[in-house]
Image (tube, rainbow, N blue to C red):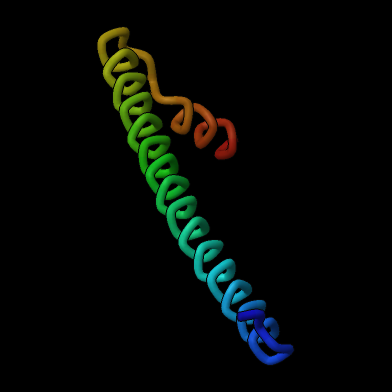
Length: 74
């Protein structure tokens, strides 16, 4: 039994809505992945900063921010 004009129109609308829902699902998944990547980058930068601080303390080097502040006071 072939679909009439109304049936074809209805199936096109339903397919379009399904495509929109699928696209939104993919966007949510991608946003979660990007948030995870951002969190990992933040953790890595914190580890690098703490490592640099430990190295500076062991070598008795003043932190770079203190050197800059000293130059500004002059």
